[in-house]
Image (cartoon, rainbow, N blue to C red; front, side, top):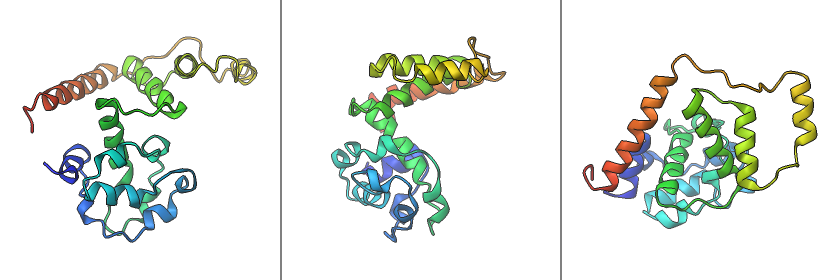
Length: 182
């Protein structure tokens, strides 16, 4: 299976439809801080350059704003491609030591556990992973005083369904790693 086919299977996006008009990169608010623009990531995927793509900072910097999707004349959702690359990077233990990767893990951990984001728990996990314990304490205290942070998480009504989706994703990745879906 080619890298482009793997991305299509994982994200549902046909990156071979991209003809490099660069409209996605022209609208991306993070192109200026990334090592590769989204059009460069997609071209590297088309060429099968797995190492280049999984080492790209854009994988972890993408904010998911979907501007790329809105601008793409072929309807390619770059956010879905980047999400698939995040999963691949984690599976292959190629996660850069970036604070945004720690934030991503903390966010998903809270969603997996409670069915929604629990901000105080998420920030506690993030702070532990990055070692930036006191950096935001004054702001956190102000947010708590204004009741913007809950001390106790609220549970989402559909959290069991969401937990099942997380479990199915893990089972899928394990089967795929064992070669059953290749």
